Length: 72
Image 1: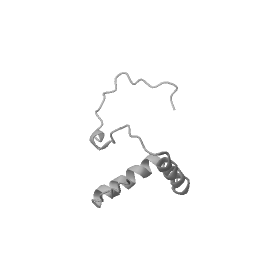
Image 2: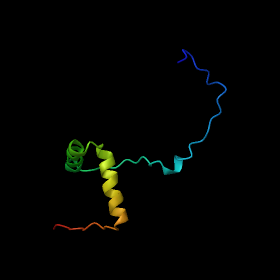
Image 3: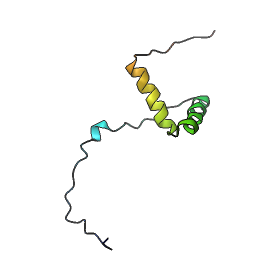
Image 4: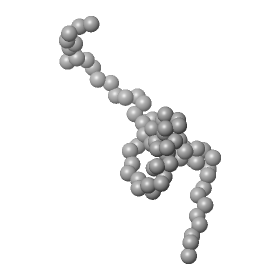
């Protein structure tokens, strides 16, 4: 292996997968929700953000709608 590599002549390429990347968002979630998914992280070994994304993706695929219960 070389001690030094010269990247000055290297041509840059755009990431062809850039459209498939996730969009960063800020969202406020209840503490219990975060704790629940962090506990699942210990079981699955996946980061809790990935678990939340997977669950929401499943909701989109199955067209699951939230059940709203309003308390008086």
